[in-house]
Amino acid sequence: MPPRPRFILLLACALPALWPLAGTATDNAVLAAGAGVQRMPAWPGAKNDRQDPVPYIDIELPGVGSFSTLDGLELEFLHGPAVRGGLYGGYQWGRERSDLGALGGKVPSLSPRVNLGGYLEWQINKAMDVGANLSHDTQGAGAYLNLYVDTDLPALGPVEEAATLRWSLMNGAAMNRFFGLGNASAAALGVAPWHPSGGSEMASLEYDLFVPTSHHTGVALALVYGRLLGGAANSPLVQQFGTANQWSESLAFIWHP
Image 1 (cartoon, one colour):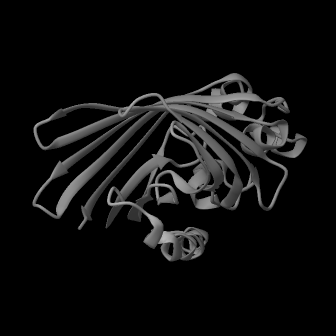
Image 2: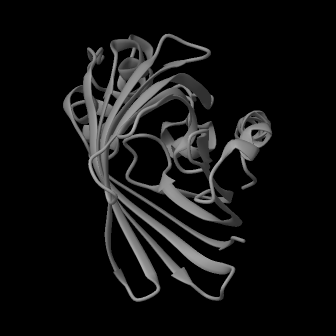
């Protein structure tokens, strides 16, 4: 399955925003590009998976911002010695009818969306950051809050490792979009309607690994385990047709200068 058109649009919009500022970045700038494959739940709460070929891009310009196909876009406007913040943009997968399997036609499909908002991050030390990003749908009423802790793990020779602990929350509009069931859908599935309120959506732990294959190339692995919470985990869509345990993996071959 090719990358979604909105995903390519996000890349096209984000990269021009960073490159004109690249000249102001320090020697600590990071540039990595490549391609790989991503496996993720077919829809939020699903117990079956989907696989998509994806581009891999990681650009970090200290004092300017960053763009990653895994973590989204950040443009830095607050430049403190330990605290930084600015504009945040992210891409959110939807669910296509083909992803829903037997639920197709009974549960509405959802188009992907771009979210925009802001972020604030505190660097505790050289290895650990604590941060949050708050964003809103550009084409809807959903709002999202992510709280996270990033840390570098001790290197194993040339192999680099990192981990991220994340807590994700949604408002009622977003929670109902992904996990709610209206009367028609509930009747088609033979379950009670479900209209969750806002609150915790998921807690997740991510492990990242980079294995060099030469001076300019390497293999990057990201493994994420997430556990749905609250109204998301209690949705009949998840309880009877999915699972609260959500696994995602991505593997890419990358090049860097």
